[in-house]
Length: 225
Image 1 (spheres, rainbow, N blue to C red):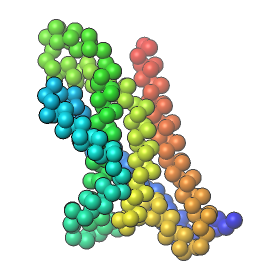
Image 2: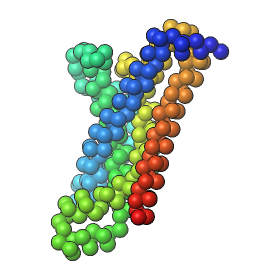
Image 3: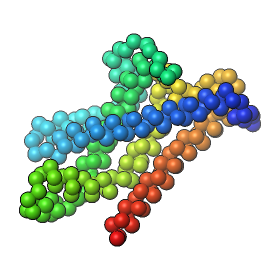
């Protein structure tokens, strides 16, 4: 097997840039998706039927359709002029990120809803009886505990997003999978390139798992004290 492309500065640079762009896409998507997820999550928790229906419809539709279809649909709707920023075509990058964010928000909404429901209702009642408002109770009592419940699921979602960034290949964005295609065409080392690509994806996802485990362990120690 020929892995000589790993010692070629050009091809190695292509792979590393693709790796960094993949990480950037996943980070952007998880942060923006988490922010957006509050809307459908609270709609699903609402006592108003129409809000619950709309929140449920949004989550179920997004989770029930392929990410690739969502991204290509948004790409066909959001028409932007071709413009390169730091070598990235914004006309493809922005619609792709929007697609990932929307997709992530549906999964994050369920994670958030589950974390909130896992908090004992008695704690909310006790906080309200002490004079805290609903907003203060949520910020200081419910949300911190919900986040602890959410950490394992958040790690899984981030790992999934890392792998799902491969759909940007169809938009011509040079994330890791697209970078692998460039190296493959230039070197004809098809099996070797895909092996290296798989290892790089594994390094990213496994590092995420280790990081979330460390955070979870630290929180457990903090609770113990």
